[in-house]
Image (tube, rainbow, N blue to C red):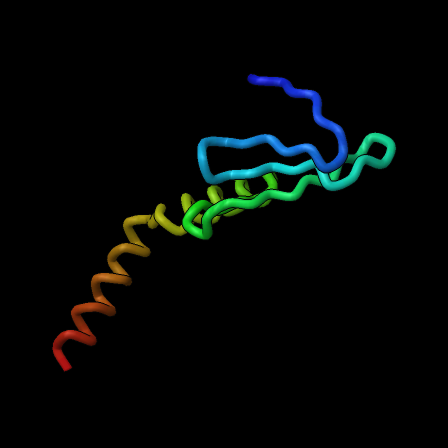
Length: 79
């Protein structure tokens, strides 16, 4: 892990197109501004972990659930 010291209004570059700027420091809280291309999702870690969990749950179907999906597909394809 790279550890850097920055003060208010100073920026860190990640690659050529991601800027992380220290916007404000109050006590033990630091506010960061992040500028990144729209193709790169930026989330707080707890939100990222929740999204990852939901995606994993959505991609994991039981045999019964898979059979229901196939049955529904066959039923709609016949019509």
